[in-house]
Every structure is written in C-alpha cells, then in structure tokens.
Length: 358
Image 1 (tube, rainbow, N blue to C red):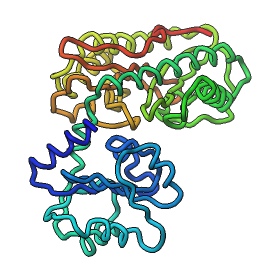
Image 2: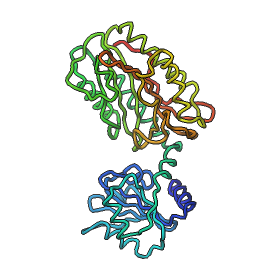
Image 3: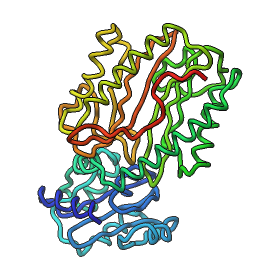
Image 4: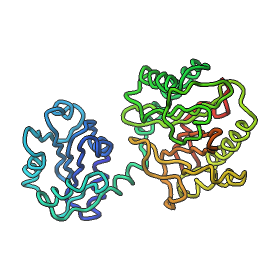
C-alpha cells in the first residue's frame, strides 16, 4: 500500500479529494495494477484518504478479491457509471482527479455530467511515480531479463539458413513462455538482411541467408514488468561494412553506459551516444531517441531523447539502444536495460554485446 499512500500525498498537495482510475479494455491497466495489484482489463479504482474501492463486473469478481485489498463494489447490470455514482454517493469531494490521456472524450463527458464538473488531470503524478522503481519492481525486471536472455541463447542455437524471420520470432516467444514468462512484452521484432534497417520491422516469411545480419528486439514479462532487449547478430561471416557500423554503435552504447547516472537529463544521456555516431557521419541514420523508461509498459517515462530536459531519477530503469539504419543495406541496434544510480548505471542485461557470428 506504500504506492497508494504516496499517491494520496501527491493528490493532497493539489487539493484533489478523490482519484478515479478508469480502466476499460486495458485503457489504464498498468496504472490500475500499479496502485491496486488488479490485473484485469475492466475496472474503476476509487481512491480517497479513507476509502479504496474497486468497481468491476462479474468476469473479475473472484480475481479482484484474490489480487487486491481494495474493497470490491460489484457491477452487476446496467451502466457502470450508475454503479460508480452509487458507490460515491456518500463521499465528500469537490475536485476529482482522472487520467485525461487514458480516457476518451465520451467518457470524459459522462464523468463531467454524472459525477463531477471539476475534473483535473493526474497523468503526470502517475508518470512521475512510475518513472522510478523500488527494489521489488527492479527484481521483477531482472527476472524478465534473465528469462529473455536464456531464451535468446537457446533460439540462436537453432538459427540456420532457410529459416524464416517468423520462425525465429515464434521460437523465441515459445522459449520465453516455456522458461516462465507470463506473457510477451511486445510483438517480437525479427528481421534479416536489408529488412534490418526497418526500425520496428515485423517478422515475415523472408528466409535467412548466409552472411546476413539478423536483428532481434524482444522481451518477456514477469510479475507485470517488462524486459526489452535488442541484439544484432550475423549468420556466418559478417561483411566489413557490417563490422564497421556495428563497432560505431557498440562504441556509442559503451560510452553512454559508462557515463549514465541519475540526475543527468534525458537529453544529456542521449547526446553522449549521438555525438559519437554523428562524428562518424551517421547522424541522419540514427533517427530515434537513445532510450526510454521500462517497467509495467515497454515504453514509459522517463524519455532518453533530445526532448527530455528533466533530470533522470535515482532507480529509474531505462533502455540504452543506439542504432544506425542504412535503407537497402542493413541496420544495427544494440539495446541494454539499466537502472540509474547517483554514482552510475547498473546494467541489468548480461548477454554479450559484441557482434556474434552464428
């Protein structure tokens, strides 16, 4: 309940009497889980200084009772907002906090008409809270990484000429599941040859060929927390150009890993790797940010990119993933997951970063 108490303190600082976390078909599943432990896809959390309620339907009555100590308010029939209105009929409130970014316009209007005409955004509160992790959260991320890396090691042993990108993705996802992942963090990226220059390319039936690069971006989930790892490998002997580009990306990432620490801004960390890539003449070929926050969602706060001038927090978990993409030829990306500390970065990923020839 420590997260809820911290959340309530931040609400109090803004004179917000009641918070509602609206989770319809996963719209705010991460924040609902973060505050209550409930992992279902449909719920409303009601959080005030003296009450903690969860409204959900019959699909989730038993699950809610097992997963959370919030008081269950069953929604049995009719409009769930009518159930909500009855649930708060004896609450005393003037200002209600909701997530503007996770509800649609229709829901906003319904809340304004039926519940309260003084709705205020609380998205930034939850972003800030989730941007730094406690030890339990970090341990879950470590377990997700361990499963992911073990699955990758076994998958790479199976890769041979003639396999398809889809074969690789399927093999990797199967092994992550078999090794204990509760689900896959995102659709696995497995591209080969010239398709590796597509930053977020989907795997296809393209067959793997000898001496071609293979880019794999993947991650498992444990206790709701994600891993996010990328490796670029080569089937057979890599070309001289591939080795050259890989070394530039490797050096850029190494510098960022060595200098990363809490309190520096996201843009400062990004610039460490970006300067190295730019000096080699590939500034235009590194078109995305250096990284992003990692936790209940694969992409969350804080951003590690030129736009983020805010200091990175102690115990923020972020990715560091520079890349160079040459359309029509190939792309290279290497991605680590790290936890930032005041005195540096603890690298959570352990799979070898050097270019691997299969």
